[in-house]
Amino acid sequence: MEPVNPFAERVLDLVERIPPGKVMSYGDIAEYLGEGGPRQVGKVMSTWGGGVPWWRVVHADGSGAAADHVQRCLAHWRDEGTPLRGERVDMRLARWDGRSADFQ
Image (tube, rainbow, N blue to C red):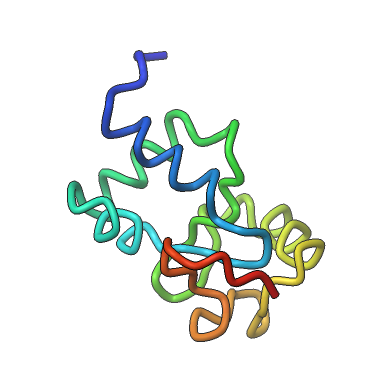
């Protein structure tokens, strides 16, 4: 595995701060950090994201990280009380802005 670069460290640090029951999209993370984009954040998560709450990083439509992880995402989301719409996160209710500690 390649060494963690400074951008990856910033992504992973932010993901660790997302409160239970809240999510950020790949694009939200890039926008918050002011660097990279959704694909770069996705690369970080796929390479080094196993040690952080990866299920709190979703696609902009509220779908989970990867199709083969849907059931694991759903289990984590339900355990944390993340607002859902079917098998997707309700982004209107669950999106975290990176600033407030607005726990459900």
